[in-house]
Amino acid sequence: MNQTDQNSEVIAAILVGCAGVFMVFGMPFFVGGIISELGFSQSQANLISSAEIAGMSLSSLMGIFWIGRFKWQKIAYFGLGVIIIGNLISSLIADFQTLVIIRFLTGLLGHGVGFALGVAAIGRTKNPDKNFAYSVASQVIMGSITALIVPVTIAKYGIAGMCVPAMLIALLTLLFVSKLTNSAKNNVQESSATTPKGILILPLIGLFIMVIWQMGVGPFFNNLVPFGLSINLKAEEIGTALFLSTGLSIIGPLAASALASKINRSVAISSALILQMIIVISFQGDMDWYGFTIRAILFQTSWNFVGPFLMGMVANVDKTGQYSVLIPASQLGGISIGHVVIASLIQGNNLALVNYFCAGVILISILLYLLSSKKLNKINQ
Image (cartoon, rainbow, N blue to C red; front, side, top):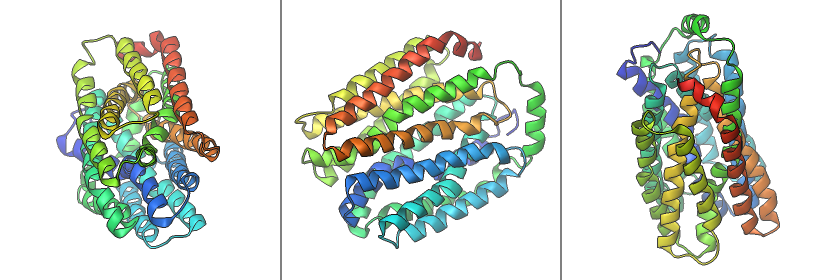
């Protein structure tokens, strides 16, 4: 994108990103649907989820090879096409091994491409912090609607109730692809000439912190549906709780956008992460619907508050998009690793270990951020 931040281009980038990240926001329902509708175990459901997230993460890593070589419009059309085809096939099969393969390929060539392209395009705008906040807010709205509708459609139509909405969002986004910047190669070359060369370590530190952080928050969120079922909440009650928590969590990115230049970033990020860690540990024992919902609201709000800060931290020193395109890889790579660990913990039937693992890696991310905060904050000066 150019430096004037054309509204049409920002909207197109946000929609492409939403189409890409849709399955991540809907993963709790997809995991729950795989268990309830296909009869797979929770461990198998987590492995399917891990396969898709791993594919998306690898897709983001591959983005460094196409971000400055191909027209972004063509990349968007390709990725959206794979999203449509991959989800269509997924809605028609019920074999575990086949589903693992299809979801991996759909994540690699479809959802991952859209997610990476959307992040890279927003990262190249003049005000990435602000536009990332708008992007996260848009994804929150999408996730909230997903939480309200998808549990019902999955109960009625099986996992097609998750796959078909993914296809519809991709079809809608196709109408806006023409608004994406079409001169990626020239723009990247021009931005590379003005980007400082001595600060490579700073975006890499930010990306690494995201990996550790997402190992805890992503897999924990994706297992909220099974957790709700384990405390005897009905599927509709869980869907309502996640609808409310996702919708209200829009406060997180909007607050981040409004407060970014007014508060100490280290205090804001650390406080939100500490709150998140405490909430994760509190998801244990007997709990009614209100307790589940309040915890989910606080968890997702703090998650969406921290995200724009960390993404903007990387994007502010990378107008080429070459490092910003790795943001999804760091996020999704962490989620994928976390899912693999959680799958092994669940096999031991000790669900409390999941809480402590997720809280532990969030704590590690806090310590890493505090140790690096002085260097990281130089990015925004």
